[in-house]
Image (cartoon, rainbow, N blue to C red; front, side):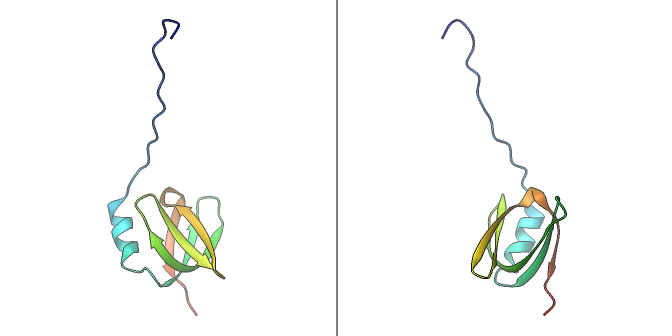
Length: 77
């Protein structure tokens, strides 16, 4: 259109295969996750995907982008 090249939008998501693989081995475990904004999420790791994880707290799912994770630890009861 109007002689200008079309602009395209490209989504880039970094994938860390080591974090992904490690987290898949602890699905169903209660964990604590520290995020880049200094918040902490505690709950059960219910799902692991290449770009995010799902942590359930009181039956409420929290979708956390893998890029936002600083550390993950098993929750101490």
